Amino acid sequence: MTTLLEPFQFEFFRNGTLAAVLVGALCGLIGVYIVLRGMSYIGHGLSHAIFGGAVVSFVMSWNFYVGAGLWGFVAAVLINQTVRRTKIGADAAIGVITTASFAVGVALISRYRRFTRSFDAALFGNILGVTQQDVWVVVGVTLLVMLVVFFFYKQLLFTTFDADVAQVYGVRTAWVDTLFALVLAAALIVSMQILGVTLIAAALVVPAITARLMTDSFSRMMLYSTLIGASTGLLGMYLSYYVDVASGATIVLLQAGLFSVVLAITSLQKRAGRRLLHTHV
Amino acid sequence: MRPLVELKDVSFGYGTEPVLMQVNLHLHPGQFAALVGPSGAGKTSLLRLILGSLQPTRGEIHIDGQVLHGQPAPCIGYVPQLETVDWTFPVTVAQVVLMGRIRRSSYWPWSSAEDKRQLEKVLASLEIDHLMNRHIRNLSGGQQQRVFLARALIAQPDLLVLDEPTTGVDMRTAENVLHLLAKLNQQGMTILMTTHDLNAAAAHVPWVICLNRRIIAEGAPETVYTVDILNETYQADMLVIRQDGLLLVQQRPHHHTYHELLPKPVLGHVDGLARGRVG
Image 1 (cartoon, each protein chain N blue to C red):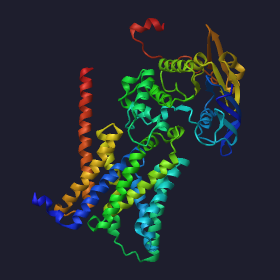
Image 2: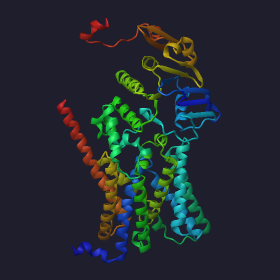
Image 3: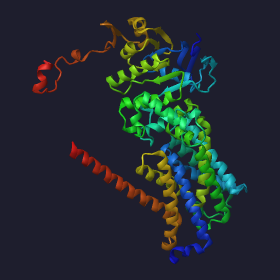
């Protein structure tokens, strides 16, 4: 028991674990909508876009959360509008808008040459550098996202299922999409600090896909995905402490491992079910 | 009697390409009409204009006396084409049908007692109450159509708009769907549907609107199904047969039939039991 509690004597570990659990839960929750909208690539893309915003914030001496958040929100809205109003598919829209935004960041860095933040931290996260302030921001964003999902549950469900028909039935899909873009950008901003640009996509997608394998119910998919995200965040932090491996990578590897196990189990169940069917026929 | 749907000199196009030109249409309360025409005639665009999803480039659309200004009219229930539905989405029949009550729903994520009552009532009326907790992909074609019809009906609309409700289902299911619509119309529902099945429309729908970018003709099938009108609508050589009180329409093949192309076609093998019937 003492061994299990040992890491918690360190403030960096307490902050990091709390942040990892909340971010895991947050990405798990949002990820359900991302996966069902067929926008699995958006986490990868938007995190790159936010990188551009982070650099702009640094150059302009803006608060990171405000600058990067605004930039990420605008990118998310642009992607949604491009997909809704043009022939361009989600994958292409994400590819264009987010890589251009990332390029803005790289261009600014090469121009001004005074980006003193760690590139590694930006790319892979700095979970062990999470401060009390960061934790409060994560708590705030998590509560905000949960409130939005709670009160707009029906509108989000209908828009995700069939946006065109939802509009006919009176759902203001443009507003719902804008709101979703806002919560997605907020979730990515806080997650980027923890997981970094390169690993956010996995945290958004893998828990949701794993949950989809486990259930045909939308509400249960949300519950499972959130729990998977939170629990892998906690276990990942523990493992990284004892095994001495990067925390973000450990969390994502745990999620990938769980996905593989669930996939294997559900595949075996399907095969057994088919064998039973053939036997009866 | 004021029309429920009124299109006044409506034109619509995507860019410079005209899709609909100077359409004048009235749909009265209690009417059951089918919109027929070839692919690209503007049938779905016309439906979407009535639904408020598209804006006309010219003219006005009135729904129940109110001009449509880009907002969908609350009195319309819509049943989309089954091909547009994502059948892998993790929702049950009950969840899909309850989406139809979104205008009357509160901001709480759960359904109210009234929502549940209306759900049970509409599912029972369409004889799919036993499917309430079933996933939507585990339904037959006819059941799928009933689920989306239930979603439209739970909204208690004055007008039901259906986009090709008989496409993608077998003949018997199509017949059942049209019979169901006829029953709803008998109960006072105004219905507008699009269809490619001219024969089914002739048998089940009392009013047919022939559309090919503009309205060519409208009226009872006996009046509208003439060679001249259908030729003009479909830009093809149509054959109309009246037999035993039925109207049957067929397009004459505009190239050679297979009898002319292959005077000695390769025939399949038929087992002894069926050989006598084939002859």
